[in-house]
Length: 287
Image (tube, rainbow, N blue to C red):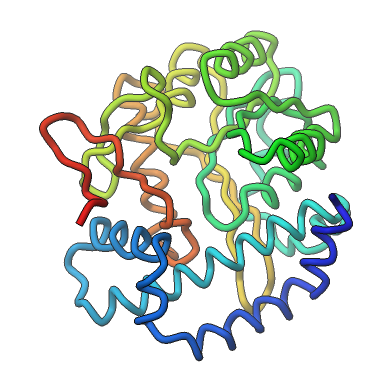
Protein backbone atom coordinates (compact mmCIF):
# COMPACT_ATOMS: atom_id res chain seq x y z
CA UNK A 1 0.00 0.00 0.00
CA UNK A 2 2.79 2.39 0.92
CA UNK A 3 4.49 1.74 -2.43
CA UNK A 4 1.30 2.60 -4.31
CA UNK A 5 0.97 5.92 -2.49
CA UNK A 6 4.65 6.61 -3.16
CA UNK A 7 4.18 6.07 -6.90
CA UNK A 8 1.18 8.41 -6.93
CA UNK A 9 3.28 11.09 -5.21
CA UNK A 10 6.59 10.57 -6.95
CA UNK A 11 7.04 14.29 -7.56
CA UNK A 12 8.42 16.51 -4.76
CA UNK A 13 5.75 18.58 -3.03
CA UNK A 14 6.80 21.95 -4.41
CA UNK A 15 6.98 20.66 -7.98
CA UNK A 16 3.60 18.92 -7.64
CA UNK A 17 2.05 22.16 -6.41
CA UNK A 18 3.50 23.95 -9.43
CA UNK A 19 1.90 21.35 -11.72
CA UNK A 20 -1.50 21.85 -10.05
CA UNK A 21 -1.15 25.60 -10.54
CA UNK A 22 -0.53 25.09 -14.27
CA UNK A 23 -3.41 22.63 -14.63
CA UNK A 24 -5.91 24.95 -12.96
CA UNK A 25 -4.98 27.79 -15.27
CA UNK A 26 -6.41 25.70 -18.12
CA UNK A 27 -9.55 24.35 -16.41
CA UNK A 28 -12.69 26.40 -17.14
CA UNK A 29 -15.08 27.26 -14.33
CA UNK A 30 -17.92 25.63 -16.26
CA UNK A 31 -16.19 22.25 -15.97
CA UNK A 32 -15.56 22.58 -12.22
CA UNK A 33 -19.20 23.46 -11.64
CA UNK A 34 -20.13 19.97 -12.89
CA UNK A 35 -18.30 18.46 -9.90
CA UNK A 36 -20.35 18.02 -6.66
CA UNK A 37 -17.39 18.79 -4.32
CA UNK A 38 -16.76 22.06 -6.14
CA UNK A 39 -20.43 23.03 -5.87
CA UNK A 40 -20.31 22.35 -2.11
CA UNK A 41 -17.13 24.42 -1.87
CA UNK A 42 -18.79 27.34 -3.62
CA UNK A 43 -21.93 27.04 -1.49
CA UNK A 44 -19.96 27.03 1.74
CA UNK A 45 -17.92 30.04 0.66
CA UNK A 46 -21.10 31.94 -0.24
CA UNK A 47 -22.37 31.29 3.31
CA UNK A 48 -19.11 32.24 5.01
CA UNK A 49 -18.53 35.33 2.85
CA UNK A 50 -22.00 36.52 1.81
CA UNK A 51 -20.88 40.00 0.78
CA UNK A 52 -18.30 39.15 -1.87
CA UNK A 53 -19.18 39.64 -5.54
CA UNK A 54 -19.99 36.64 -7.76
CA UNK A 55 -16.76 36.97 -9.74
CA UNK A 56 -14.69 37.09 -6.56
CA UNK A 57 -16.61 34.08 -5.21
CA UNK A 58 -15.82 32.08 -8.36
CA UNK A 59 -12.12 32.94 -8.15
CA UNK A 60 -11.98 32.00 -4.46
CA UNK A 61 -13.88 28.75 -5.01
CA UNK A 62 -11.54 27.71 -7.82
CA UNK A 63 -8.47 28.57 -5.77
CA UNK A 64 -9.86 26.70 -2.77
CA UNK A 65 -10.62 23.59 -4.82
CA UNK A 66 -7.08 23.64 -6.19
CA UNK A 67 -5.67 23.84 -2.66
CA UNK A 68 -7.92 20.93 -1.63
CA UNK A 69 -6.35 18.77 -4.35
CA UNK A 70 -2.90 19.87 -3.19
CA UNK A 71 -3.91 18.86 0.33
CA UNK A 72 -4.93 15.42 -0.95
CA UNK A 73 -1.51 15.09 -2.60
CA UNK A 74 0.10 16.11 0.74
CA UNK A 75 -1.85 13.36 2.49
CA UNK A 76 -0.80 10.61 0.06
CA UNK A 77 2.76 11.96 0.23
CA UNK A 78 2.69 11.77 4.03
CA UNK A 79 1.37 8.19 4.01
CA UNK A 80 4.36 7.07 1.96
CA UNK A 81 7.19 9.01 3.63
CA UNK A 82 9.04 8.84 6.92
CA UNK A 83 8.48 11.29 9.75
CA UNK A 84 11.97 12.68 9.06
CA UNK A 85 10.81 13.68 5.59
CA UNK A 86 7.79 15.51 7.01
CA UNK A 87 9.98 17.29 9.54
CA UNK A 88 12.28 18.30 6.69
CA UNK A 89 9.38 19.86 4.78
CA UNK A 90 8.21 21.77 7.87
CA UNK A 91 10.19 24.95 7.54
CA UNK A 92 8.72 26.93 10.43
CA UNK A 93 6.94 26.40 13.73
CA UNK A 94 4.65 29.30 14.54
CA UNK A 95 4.55 29.47 18.36
CA UNK A 96 6.38 26.65 20.12
CA UNK A 97 3.70 25.95 22.71
CA UNK A 98 3.88 22.21 22.15
CA UNK A 99 7.43 22.26 23.47
CA UNK A 100 7.23 25.07 26.02
CA UNK A 101 3.90 24.52 27.81
CA UNK A 102 3.25 21.28 29.66
CA UNK A 103 5.44 18.31 30.30
CA UNK A 104 4.18 15.10 28.62
CA UNK A 105 2.94 13.85 32.01
CA UNK A 106 0.71 16.89 32.56
CA UNK A 107 -1.81 16.28 29.79
CA UNK A 108 -2.74 18.46 26.83
CA UNK A 109 -5.77 18.88 24.54
CA UNK A 110 -5.10 19.80 20.91
CA UNK A 111 -7.97 20.65 18.58
CA UNK A 112 -7.37 21.12 14.88
CA UNK A 113 -9.13 22.11 11.69
CA UNK A 114 -8.84 20.81 8.13
CA UNK A 115 -6.45 23.45 6.91
CA UNK A 116 -4.44 21.57 4.29
CA UNK A 117 -3.52 17.97 5.20
CA UNK A 118 -4.51 16.74 8.67
CA UNK A 119 -2.23 13.71 8.20
CA UNK A 120 0.80 15.90 7.49
CA UNK A 121 0.06 17.81 10.69
CA UNK A 122 -0.50 14.65 12.77
CA UNK A 123 2.68 13.07 11.38
CA UNK A 124 4.67 16.07 12.53
CA UNK A 125 3.05 16.10 15.98
CA UNK A 126 3.50 12.33 16.39
CA UNK A 127 7.21 12.65 15.68
CA UNK A 128 7.51 14.94 18.71
CA UNK A 129 4.96 13.62 21.19
CA UNK A 130 2.74 10.55 21.56
CA UNK A 131 -1.00 11.14 21.74
CA UNK A 132 -4.45 9.59 21.50
CA UNK A 133 -6.45 10.90 18.56
CA UNK A 134 -9.93 10.57 17.12
CA UNK A 135 -10.22 9.56 13.48
CA UNK A 136 -13.04 8.88 11.05
CA UNK A 137 -12.92 5.39 9.58
CA UNK A 138 -12.19 5.16 5.86
CA UNK A 139 -14.75 3.13 3.92
CA UNK A 140 -12.10 0.99 2.23
CA UNK A 141 -11.04 -1.56 4.87
CA UNK A 142 -7.51 -2.14 3.47
CA UNK A 143 -6.80 1.61 3.34
CA UNK A 144 -8.37 2.08 6.77
CA UNK A 145 -6.11 -0.60 8.28
CA UNK A 146 -3.06 0.92 6.63
CA UNK A 147 -3.85 4.49 7.74
CA UNK A 148 -4.67 3.47 11.32
CA UNK A 149 -1.40 1.53 11.60
CA UNK A 150 0.49 4.43 10.03
CA UNK A 151 -1.02 6.99 12.40
CA UNK A 152 -0.25 4.82 15.43
CA UNK A 153 3.51 4.87 14.85
CA UNK A 154 5.46 6.44 17.68
CA UNK A 155 3.31 4.99 20.51
CA UNK A 156 0.24 6.92 19.34
CA UNK A 157 -3.28 5.53 19.60
CA UNK A 158 -6.11 6.11 17.13
CA UNK A 159 -9.73 5.69 18.21
CA UNK A 160 -12.73 5.90 15.90
CA UNK A 161 -15.20 8.76 16.30
CA UNK A 162 -18.24 7.76 18.30
CA UNK A 163 -19.10 6.98 21.90
CA UNK A 164 -16.31 4.41 22.26
CA UNK A 165 -13.71 6.80 20.91
CA UNK A 166 -14.89 9.59 23.18
CA UNK A 167 -14.55 7.28 26.19
CA UNK A 168 -10.96 6.51 25.15
CA UNK A 169 -10.20 10.23 24.87
CA UNK A 170 -11.68 10.83 28.34
CA UNK A 171 -9.54 8.02 29.73
CA UNK A 172 -6.41 9.55 28.16
CA UNK A 173 -7.15 12.92 29.73
CA UNK A 174 -7.69 11.31 33.13
CA UNK A 175 -4.27 9.69 32.74
CA UNK A 176 -2.73 13.11 31.93
CA UNK A 177 -1.93 12.16 28.35
CA UNK A 178 -2.09 14.27 25.20
CA UNK A 179 -5.14 14.08 22.94
CA UNK A 180 -5.72 15.41 19.42
CA UNK A 181 -8.94 15.84 17.49
CA UNK A 182 -10.21 17.65 14.41
CA UNK A 183 -13.05 19.84 15.69
CA UNK A 184 -14.45 21.41 12.52
CA UNK A 185 -16.53 18.53 11.15
CA UNK A 186 -20.15 17.68 11.89
CA UNK A 187 -20.19 15.18 14.79
CA UNK A 188 -22.57 12.29 15.38
CA UNK A 189 -25.80 13.22 17.10
CA UNK A 190 -25.26 13.65 20.80
CA UNK A 191 -21.60 14.66 20.44
CA UNK A 192 -22.18 18.29 19.53
CA UNK A 193 -24.19 21.43 20.14
CA UNK A 194 -25.54 24.17 17.89
CA UNK A 195 -23.30 27.22 17.69
CA UNK A 196 -22.49 29.90 15.14
CA UNK A 197 -19.81 29.33 12.51
CA UNK A 198 -19.26 32.30 10.20
CA UNK A 199 -22.47 33.72 11.68
CA UNK A 200 -24.47 30.70 10.51
CA UNK A 201 -25.97 28.08 12.83
CA UNK A 202 -23.93 24.88 12.73
CA UNK A 203 -23.92 21.58 14.62
CA UNK A 204 -20.45 21.75 16.20
CA UNK A 205 -18.18 19.16 17.83
CA UNK A 206 -18.15 19.98 21.54
CA UNK A 207 -15.63 17.46 22.90
CA UNK A 208 -12.48 19.64 23.04
CA UNK A 209 -14.00 22.63 24.90
CA UNK A 210 -15.98 20.32 27.19
CA UNK A 211 -12.79 18.44 28.10
CA UNK A 212 -10.97 21.71 28.72
CA UNK A 213 -13.72 23.04 30.96
CA UNK A 214 -14.05 19.86 33.03
CA UNK A 215 -10.39 18.88 33.29
CA UNK A 216 -8.81 22.36 33.34
CA UNK A 217 -6.04 20.94 31.15
CA UNK A 218 -4.15 23.21 28.74
CA UNK A 219 -5.68 23.39 25.28
CA UNK A 220 -4.16 24.46 21.95
CA UNK A 221 -5.38 25.07 18.43
CA UNK A 222 -3.16 23.46 15.79
CA UNK A 223 -3.20 23.75 12.01
CA UNK A 224 -0.98 23.44 8.96
CA UNK A 225 -0.37 26.26 6.48
CA UNK A 226 1.84 26.79 3.46
CA UNK A 227 4.08 29.71 2.59
CA UNK A 228 5.01 29.75 -1.11
CA UNK A 229 8.40 31.29 -0.37
CA UNK A 230 9.19 29.21 2.69
CA UNK A 231 7.27 25.92 2.70
CA UNK A 232 5.03 24.21 5.23
CA UNK A 233 4.38 25.88 8.56
CA UNK A 234 3.12 24.20 11.75
CA UNK A 235 0.98 26.60 13.74
CA UNK A 236 -0.05 26.51 17.39
CA UNK A 237 -2.28 29.03 19.10
CA UNK A 238 -3.59 29.49 22.62
CA UNK A 239 -7.36 29.97 22.37
CA UNK A 240 -9.32 32.53 24.34
CA UNK A 241 -9.98 31.69 27.99
CA UNK A 242 -13.65 31.71 26.99
CA UNK A 243 -13.11 28.15 25.79
CA UNK A 244 -13.10 27.04 29.46
CA UNK A 245 -16.64 28.36 29.97
CA UNK A 246 -20.14 27.22 29.03
CA UNK A 247 -19.64 29.20 25.80
CA UNK A 248 -16.58 27.13 24.94
CA UNK A 249 -17.91 25.69 21.68
CA UNK A 250 -18.68 29.16 20.33
CA UNK A 251 -15.22 30.34 21.44
CA UNK A 252 -13.66 27.36 19.62
CA UNK A 253 -15.57 28.16 16.42
CA UNK A 254 -14.44 31.78 16.56
CA UNK A 255 -10.81 30.68 16.92
CA UNK A 256 -11.12 28.47 13.84
CA UNK A 257 -12.88 31.25 11.93
CA UNK A 258 -9.97 33.60 12.60
CA UNK A 259 -7.53 31.10 11.11
CA UNK A 260 -9.70 30.48 8.05
CA UNK A 261 -10.28 34.18 7.36
CA UNK A 262 -6.51 34.70 7.23
CA UNK A 263 -6.24 32.33 4.23
CA UNK A 264 -9.70 31.10 3.11
CA UNK A 265 -8.43 29.08 0.15
CA UNK A 266 -6.36 26.74 2.36
CA UNK A 267 -9.40 25.48 4.26
CA UNK A 268 -11.24 22.35 3.06
CA UNK A 269 -14.58 23.83 2.04
CA UNK A 270 -15.75 20.76 0.09
CA UNK A 271 -17.20 19.23 3.28
CA UNK A 272 -20.92 19.82 4.01
CA UNK A 273 -20.31 21.74 7.21
CA UNK A 274 -23.87 23.09 7.49
CA UNK A 275 -25.75 19.89 6.67
CA UNK A 276 -27.26 19.16 10.11
CA UNK A 277 -29.48 22.13 10.85
CA UNK A 278 -32.16 22.43 13.54
CA UNK A 279 -35.80 22.23 12.46
CA UNK A 280 -37.44 23.89 10.62
CA UNK A 281 -34.33 24.87 8.63
CA UNK A 282 -33.93 22.94 5.39
CA UNK A 283 -30.88 21.34 3.73
CA UNK A 284 -28.99 24.26 2.21
CA UNK A 285 -27.12 21.96 -0.20
CA UNK A 286 -30.25 20.98 -2.09
CA UNK A 287 -31.00 23.16 -5.10
